[in-house]
Length: 149
Image (cartoon, rainbow, N blue to C red; front, side):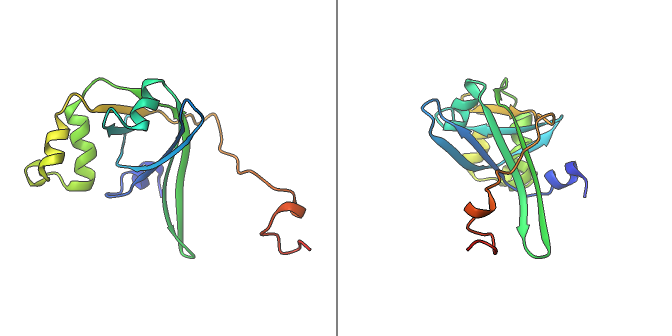
């Protein structure tokens, strides 16, 4: 399956990871839109991810479908987050992926957020030059190694 088609499947969530300025790991499930070569998110300005975007922090984004043994698909990227100018159409597109195209049918909370300029629209352009590498343990320290004595 093509990268963009997978990311465009309705209802699929993104897992976003960042590190706070104090070194605390942050991880959350976030609604997203992949468009114009970047991941787009909308967050309350007081959230750790909006704060990360304000400081242009590097984040990791994972979008997956994990249904072994038949289906294991994932997109894992890293990139610098950044705050974008308010864009109600972009926020509407994010929400429409999860709530449907008819904004009038959305719960009032989401209708209000789609046009609320105090919420933070932020994005992450994937840095495809940096490949994600899995950490590898030596065989004698790997608890999953069947040959470990």
